[in-house]
Amino acid sequence: MEEIFDGSFTQQEPISEIAISAALRVLRSGRLHRYNVIEGEVAETTLLEEEFARLIGSKYSLAVASGGYAMGCALRAIGVKAGDFVLSNAFTLAPVPGAIAGVGALPVFVDTVDNLTIDLEDLEQKIKSSDSKVLLLSHMRGHICDMDKLMAICNTHNVKVIEDCAHTMGASWAGVASGRHGIIGCYSCQTYKHLNSGEGGLLVTDDDEVIARAIVLSGSYMLFEQHRSIPDLAVFEKIKLETPNISGRMDNLRAAILRPQLSDLRDRVSRWNERYKIIEDGLRNVPIIKIIERAEDEAYVGSSLQFKIPKTNGNQIQIFLNGCMKRGVELKWFGASAPKAFTSKYDSWAYIEPQELVNTDRILSGLIDMRLPLTFSLKDCQIVARIISSEAMKLSKA
Ligand SMILES: *Cc1c(COP(=O)(O)O)cnc(C)c1O
Image (tube, rainbow, N blue to C red; front, side, top):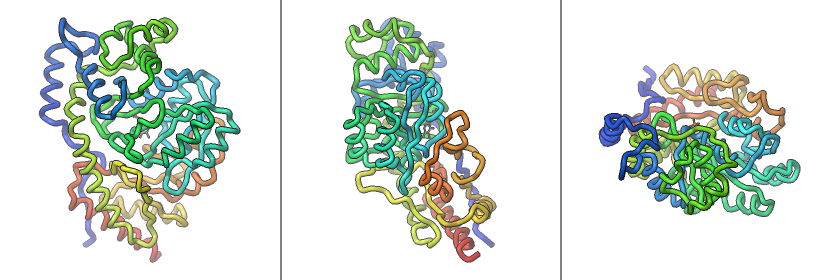
């Protein structure tokens, strides 16, 4: 009998009792809207922003409706306008080009290198050829490029960097938290990311005017004085009338669920990485599988795992995926001709001007993706690694 896995790749851990109690307090108060406070009360959302800024080490933070909203808000807050070119990774998730399209700007895709990060040579080329002044950098699936080199290139060419940290909350490069290299860092609190409030987003920055604009953009109804993570009120006076309200606030219920999770983040990161390591070790010596190597400076969060089956055709990969699936191991493939679930890729976003990224195509054609929920025990991870290895071995013998 072949070994079968019966865990769920989409099942996250329950919300803690502490967070549930906090949520019940908000529900019982009836004051779910962040600006609905009584005398002397500080909203949960306001407290979350203060605590998140402290955790990440930024001056300011703003809580919003989703990670995608945070990115759109960030682009607007630094002045991106309709018709502007915005650089971004060709290997990223649909909400990233979506955020660019949402402000009427035009994505310019940058190619990918073998460790799944942005191609820094191509980045410099594209900065020159597009004359773009903004990079929305996606740390896609939690892979972080050489941030020192990237920032040096962007600073040389006066390109502002917004970081998409949907999979790097709690990660860092050379000791600097992900989201703290660029002018703005954007995070998601969607169920499949590192904090779970169902939906939700956070952004961080040190820039006085950027945070003021972001707060007004998020829909502060001129109640920005209630925020604690804010610059001098004079900064708001400059921008408040010229900045539109593009409603996308977070509410107190979500903030209440998130606040207790902040103190668990470090522990969750080490539990993810423990699991990641087991699967990575289990796959490392399978000849047909190529592990994605990590740089020494990259302190990542292994909340998902990618590996490559290079030089295999699509039929064989499909056989491998089906073989794993039959044994309960749900993998995704970034090389399919039509997008499935979250694996859509740059050439499936037909609303964008067609672009050619040779290395991205080559890499994605053999790229397999696996979610790694914390509900998996360490033993589960060993089983998953064994099943993937044995199905891959079948492929190499075929
Ligand atoms: C999830 C995700 C987002 C967007 O987050 P939402 O909260 O779902 O809007 C952006 N970028 C990447 C890479 C993601 O994985």
